[in-house]
Amino acid sequence: MLMRLISPLCMSLLIVGCATSSKTFDAEGKEAQVLNCSGMARNWGMCYEKAGELCGAKGYEVIDKSGYTGWVMGGSTGRNLVIRCNGNFRVGSGRNSAG
Image 1 (cartoon, rainbow, N blue to C red):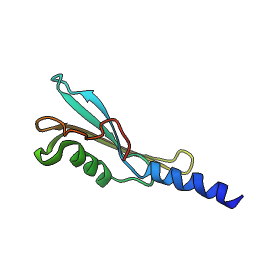
Image 2: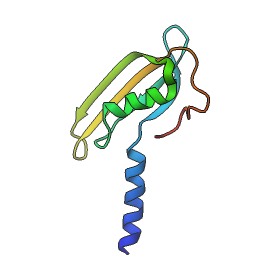
Image 3: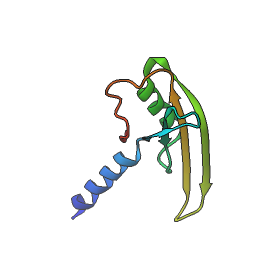
Image 4: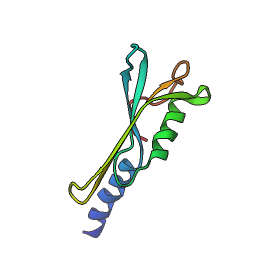
């Protein structure tokens, strides 16, 4: 019984531990990425790490950064970073994927 409870808990910790990204477009119509690092188990560093994975050595420009802290169901923290890569996205960057 205990093992049945531990496995889903471990999986949920792995899922919430990564920043997620999704494709969008900036005001100029250029491709950009929205990075989500929301949650108590995440931090801004995870957003910046994901940005580095997506854009590689060419780097990126931060278009927007927003965050909030609230007290919904014991506390919540939201973090979103919108970036545009300098040049093209890296091949195999795992766009639209978690962690």
